[in-house]
Amino acid sequence: MNSEKLSKRLTAVASFVEQNATLADIGSDHAYLPCFLVKAGKISKAIAGEVVKGPYESAIKNVQKKGLTEAITVRMANGLDAIHDSDGVDTVTIAGMGGPLIASILRDGAEKLHSVKRIVTQPNIHAMSIREWAVQNGWKIVDEQILKEDHKIYEIIVLEKGQADYSELEMMVGPYLLKEKSEIFIEKWKRESDEWKRVLASLEIAGDTVEINKKREQLREKNELLGGVLTN
Ligand code: SAM
Image 1 (cartoon, helix red, strand yellow):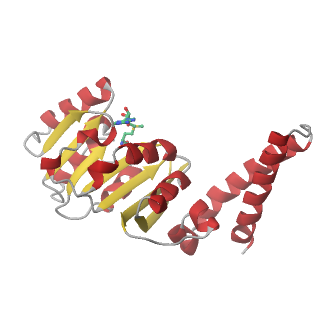
Image 2 (image 1 turned 60 degrees about the vertical axis):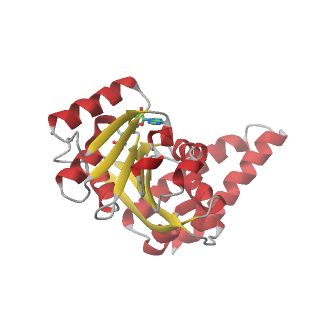
Image 3 (image 1 turned 45 degrees about the vertical axis):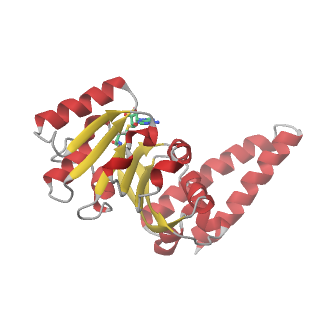
């Protein structure tokens, strides 16, 4: 992968960034995504934020190599601290991390989101944490995508400001993805369900503490919720 030829996963993330957006890409190892979007003529200004020195230096090097230092500012910063008020950022991308980490970056940087209109997230795991953050903080889901690359399944969740109600099942699997019910979606949730059943089977013989009973109950509930999705 490089900034001319992105992975399928990052290409999908890029497709949700709107024409002429002012972007902050948080966790921007190599700055591949902002470089690609500027080179493609989709955006002309971006911030690439990185908290770790190695990836931050890779981002600086790549932006220089591509001759994009005018368009892309690379900052070493934790989460949304990379965004300054004067940047006028209206779109944030956060890709390639766990859902809980993405949700904590959004939670910790709440005051940086005032001018932001769209957040594109690509959680590697536990996407539900992002949906939970969204409903608790005045954001709604406007689009979702699920894709498979190198045997791994990835979800993308796109948020804009607003209120929406989601069922427990929609929160778990995603309202748009549930409606679409693609083959990859079914594969993902079959895998999850099989894993829950395996854990449940080992918990059935693990004794009877309050904690084990609670875990068993949670897994049974999740499997029941999912049941209709996998059989229809
Ligand atoms: N976004 C790229 C992608 O999707 O290919 C890079 C993903 S890489 C697995 C995650 C990057 O996020 C790492 O470079 C890591 O250092 C960075 N990161 C993790 N937590 C961060 C935070 N709180 N603020 C900024 N960057 C962070």
